[in-house]
Amino acid sequence: LLRLLNLVHEVDAVWIASWPLILIAVVAGLLVTTRLDRWGAVAAATDSDPGAPGRSGRAPSGATVLRWTASVIAPFLLFVYNLRQPPSGPTFEAASRLLSNFWRDSGAAVAASLRTSAAVGLAGAAVTAATWFGLSDARRSPLARGAARWSLRILLIAALIPGVLVGSVTDHAWNAYGWSRWVADSSIIVVLAHLARFGFVGSLVGWWLARLEPPQQRDLRLVDGADTVRGWLAVCVAPHAGALLGAALAMGALSFHEIECTVLLQVPGVDSLAQQVLEHLHYARDDRLAAAAVSLLAAGVAVAYAAATLLSLGAGRDASDTARSGPPPAPYAPVG
Image (cartoon, rainbow, N blue to C red; front, side):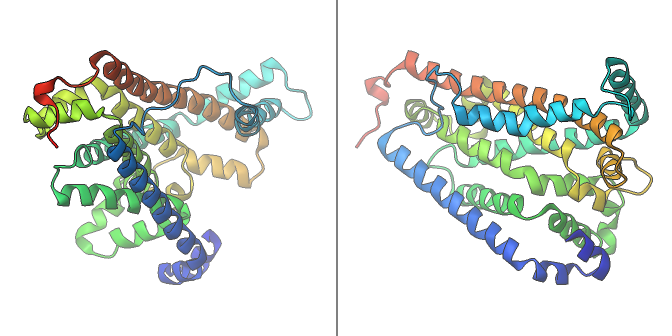
């Protein structure tokens, strides 16, 4: 797709040629969101909690260990092995020198990528909060609930579309008019493209948090008139603000590693980590690529663990609150 885009320079032709991929993305996104809607409807009808993950205390399954080994541990060890100066072996001195050179030579690119990922993370927290509020109870206006549901559908479809296509249409849209070209000439366009690619994470977390609220707490909040934005912030968001931070960290980590959109939209003169990694890959600079990969894998695992911990703590607090509170008192019991 990237080669075709560079050859024809016509976004419409590339999108038409990619119609099978787009069709798969649309169908898959609609199927997933339809399943989520049905799951939430069944849970609401039975007063069950679809959001709280099971906590069985069992050891990780063989499939989980295999996935982690194949996707994280094995690549990490291979990259560590390549931290050497050919034809020498992977000595500690060589690995330390290559890692030190990476951070020295790529410091500016890492800082630029961190700024972009921080902006994407903040925007992701806003997407999470908006979806959470729109789906927080059945009395919300149809417009708010419809906007939350359709944003989830659109963001899921965008996530399944190849990043090259998302980057090309973003570039075409913001360069189409004179008044919007200032966006295309700044790093904002990269943030917008990353938000289109990874906004589904924030929207899914918002859906999950809305379904995670115990039915008893939701009934009490509605009866007490705490269904406004202020009441929702005090009752729902304040105790679980860590979940918003977890969604922001997850989206920021995905943005930090993104390559496809970044290389298309990066402002000239601004160095980026994605561009450097792509150059190392194309020019077969295996030792520099290994240093970058080891650093990115280690940082990615740390951020992913922090995000998962924050999200699971939010689920645990909801579960413990429900267990302590029990059923609502009789005066607040829903009628009918």
